[in-house]
Length: 387
Image 1: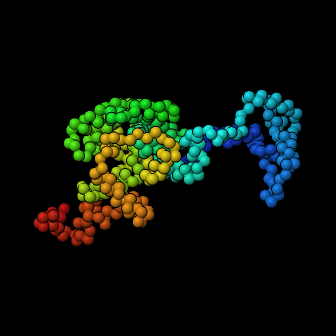
Image 2 (image 1 turned 120 degrees about the vertical axis):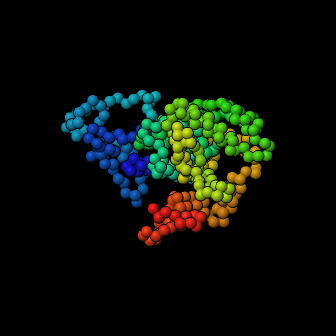
Image 3 (image 1 turned 60 degrees about the vertical axis):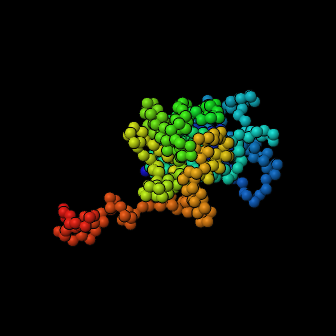
């Protein structure tokens, strides 16, 4: 479980850019700071430091600073003289801080750094993704993960968090973004490739006219989601198998899982939700859902803070009478009246008690309290073979 623990710890830590101030600049004997022995000088908190104090501290730091150059270890202990190397020219020095202008447009990263709530939300999302990956062993060392990017808030958030995870994870894995151009009307084919190039992400764009097929096959007014999703899965799963991609990452989140539970309960009479990890029906692909622990609200706010280029869906988004929307409205009403109810329902999916349900395939009720050699009856009331 050491690797799983590392996943969670890394996701809980804030992501910081590499900086000379953050790197470990210890000398040959491990000294850190400007005081003897590598221990930084401490200043009492109750003493206000004047301008002269700072000047004196700077002068002391200049005197006590370890000599850097072609010296051996004895030089740092003061036993041998050591010449300081010449100072680098001003053009070669690293900037201490970046000057921000009021009229300068902020990118998403700068905006998140300046917004404490957005930073806390991003940390929470990273922690939840890391926990889900560890709990279900979603990504392993050497995996080639295909991230399905539709252009919506969920898939953009998934890709963004996996990229941060890839840079800090205890294992090495590859990310490949794949987008399916379904030939929907009004679709801008340059939005997604442009953003992926800016993020320096390896990507592929597949083209398949699923829109024309769905409009031709499904009568007007009927739900198009089922056929559309099957066509989309077929194209993506086939591409993953052909390219040797070991995992397929989808952007379904906690709320999707709970909604699927009630859809199956109300319309299929089954207690079944959306698994965080599964093997495809043809057995060729492993599908993972790293956002399984993340709420839709956090994902939507994260996408807004990061200013992802969201593409609307003009096919299924125009259908207002979908059963999933009815379930979503029901859950939203519950959540407004009883905050935390969606989370409790989601947690219940991981704490099932088969002995307190009615599925005899999961629990042997017939064997409970059976007397030895006593005959038992079958479902039709007749005697069954006790063996």
